[in-house]
Length: 369
Image (cartoon, rainbow, N blue to C red; front, side, top):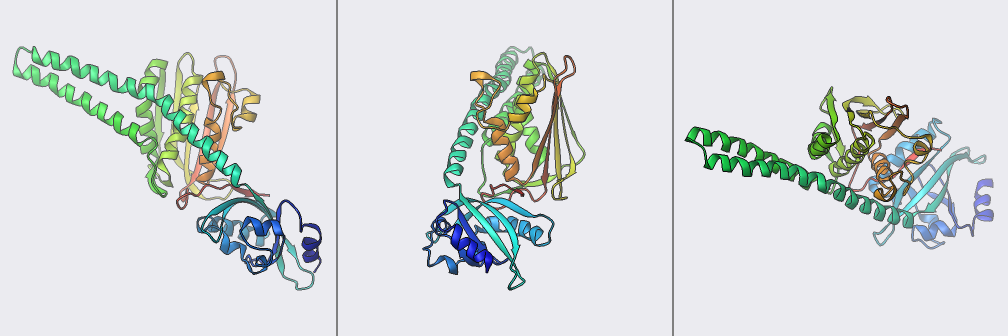
C-alpha cells in the first residue's frame, strides 16, 4: 500500500510521531517516535489502538471531530488531547488528523501527526497558577475595602445604640448594624469562593457567578465612578468550573474598570445564545464598557502570554488565561473595540454551550484544520 510505504520509508526516524490507522484508531503502521510518546516499544505499536489510548474525558470530543471528518464536513482537524500510558500517567499531544483513501482496499484510513506537548502544558499550568495568585492579589484591596466600610459602620452604630435616649432608638441602630454585618459576611463568603474549585464540572447559574464578582467590585465601582447595569433575559445553568468562570469575569470586568479613567458605564448582559462554530445552544455573556478602547496592535496581541499595556503593573497573563478557560469550556470569545475621543469602548462577547466543560480536567483545544 502506497501510504503504508510512505510512513515506513519517510517517517521512521522523524522527531514527530506519525501513524496510519483505520477509522476506529487501530494502528496499521506507525513510527518509533509515536511508540515512545505512548510508551510502547516499536514492536508493540502495531497492536495499539490510538482511540482506546485516548484519555476517557477527551474521547467524546475526538469522536465528534472524527465524525465530521468522515462525513466530509471538514478536510481534517487538529486536537490537543491526552494519551494514557500503561503506567497510568498521561501525556499531552497535539494531533493533526486527515483522511486518505486506500486504493487497494477501497476503505478510508486516517493519517495522524502527533506532537508531544507535555512540557508546554506543564509550563502553561504554572503560568495559569501564577495568574490565579495575581488575581487574588488584585482583589485583596477591593475585598478589604468592602469589609472595612460595613465594619466601621457597625462600630459607629453600636456607639449610637449605647448612647440612645430609649430602647426603640437603640434597636433601630442595632438593626442597621446587623444588616452591615450581614454585608461583611457576604463579602467574605464571596472572596472565599473566588478560587474554590470542585473536582469536576458542575451545573452552575451564570448570573449567580456574575453577581458574586460584582459584589467584590462594588467599592471599586464607586471609587472609579463606574455605573453598572446587569441585564438578564434568562437565568441559565452552565456546566462549568465555577472558580474558573469567576476568574474570567474578574479579568474582563477588572480590565473594563481600569480602562474608564474618568468614570463611565459598564453594561453586562446574559441571555441564551448559539455557539456559531457548532450551532450548539448555550449562554451568551456580553461585557461592554465606555473606556479608552484598544489599539489595533493590542487587539492583535492581547491573548499572547506576557503581552501587556500596563507596564510593571500588569503580568500580561490575564487575557491569555481567560482565553484558555473559555476554550476549556468549549466556548468562544469575540472582542470589538474602538478608540475615539469621547466615544471609545470595548465589548467582549462570550458564548458557551450548555454542556460546557466535561470531566475533571477537560482542558484541550480543537479546531478544524
